[in-house]
Length: 292
Image (cartoon, rainbow, N blue to C red; front, side):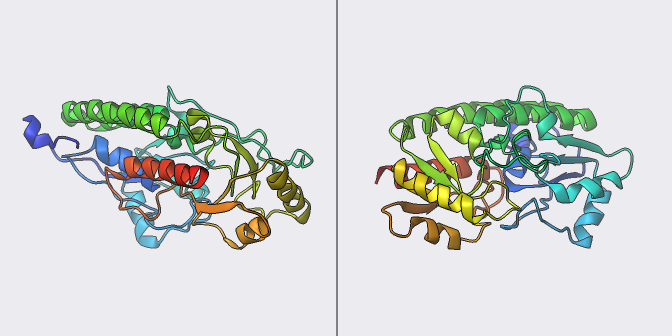
C-alpha cells in the first residue's frame, strides 16, 4: 500500500486540479497523488474510449483543469477536439509521448487489406499493459505533477518510489504465473494485448476484429475459422466492450474454450489498486483458459 502523506511527515499544501481519461491511467495517477487528492475520472464504466461522449459537466471539469492525463489521440479520440478548447495554461500529458516507454505498432492480421485506414503502421496505445511502461508512466506523471505543484514534490517522489517497487514485484509475479502458458495458441477479439503478450511470451495466432470500429468481413472470418482449426487454438478471448455473438460463431463445432479479457478494468473498482488488480485479472484469465 502507498504511505499516506501525513504519515510521511510531509505537509500537504493542497492539490492541483487534475483530470484523467481512463481507469488504468487513473489508478497510476491516483497512486502518485496518494495522500494529496483523488483526481476525477472521465470514463468510469465500460464505455469504449474510441467512441465515448462526454457529459456537459465533465467538459466543465476539463475546462477548469490544471493538468490533464490521457493516453493520446490513438485511444481517446473523443478528447482530441475538447482539449483544443481548454484554457491556454492547462498542461496536457499524453502517455504515448513520455520518455522511457517501449511502444509497439499495431499488427495487421489481414495482409490482403491495404487501405489508408489499416492499423499496420499505427502506434498501439495500450502501453499500460506492460508494467515496465507503467513505471515510465508513473515517472512522467510525477514529473508533470511536480512541475505544477512543486511544494508537494517530496510526496510525489515518495509515492513514485513505492509504486515502482510494487510494479517490479507485480512483473515478477506475472512472469512466474504465466510461465506454463507460453506456446499455447489463442485468438483475441481485437489487438489490445500486444504489450502484455510480448512481455510474457504469449502466443496469439489471430484477431477477430482488425479495428475496433470495423466489423470483420466474411472472408476474414472464414480464414480465421480455418486458422483456429489448423493451429489447434485452445482459447478465444472476447472483451466486455464488444458483441460476443461472433465468439459463438467462431467456436461453434470446435473444442475451443472462450473467456473474457478486459484491458480497461471496466468491472474493477477505480482507485490506486485497480492497475494491480487489472494485470492480475488478465494473468488469471490467460492462465485459467489456456491451462485448464
